[in-house]
Image 1 (cartoon, rainbow, N blue to C red):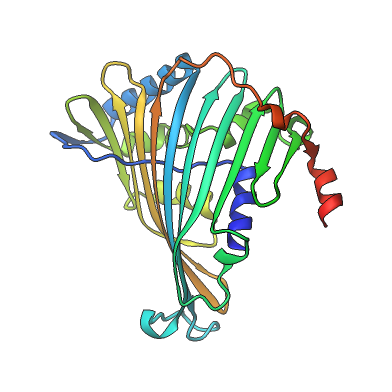
Image 2: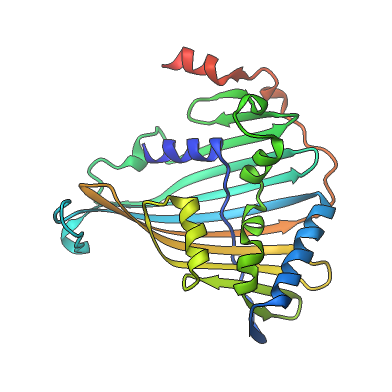
Length: 295
């Protein structure tokens, strides 16, 4: 059920993680007023641009290991206790208009490799490659999952959120820029290259770990957390982001250990005037209708 759960997570709350492209840093300073100023100028620049293209590549390697004794502290031996290993990759491309909220997202998920999988949760679909399409506009979300082969539509205004702005925060690919906040921007290390300011955080910041845990689940142990965002010196628009973490989750008989890396790039700020739903989605059925016909 691994991939199905993953798809439902994306459909329900599209909290996208983020990206890396290497650079050579020339200056390094501990954060403070300057990093906070850069961060707030970036927020203002994104708000003024109102639209952009984005592309994301996320990789996740998962090891499901047998706990030596679920009632005791977990002791892992990779050679003896590892029962399942697999790696997935998400490739996501899309466009977003912030106001009025419109989103296009095309996501392809692939199972890259597997090892020692007795009952691999990555193989419960007919194919190791699946596609998800999401469009959000005029208060509705249109979704297509290749495994089901049907478009469905949900009225976001019927969901128990305060308003569409709260939904925007959940599905916006700028989620991690917004998540940084002045508190973490102040603690960020500032680096520069010829074209960019680079704000970076590591897992030695308690507030950073707290926010990462809020994303991935408070019951999991987070380690090796890394975050970098590249901001153009002239426009103050973000151009790329890097996000990494290692997550250990004790689920009783097993312990899941996963390493997540995401790379995100932004382009064409202010260049998108309209996003339209594909013709094949215009006859989409509701989620309730889909469930009635398939369960």
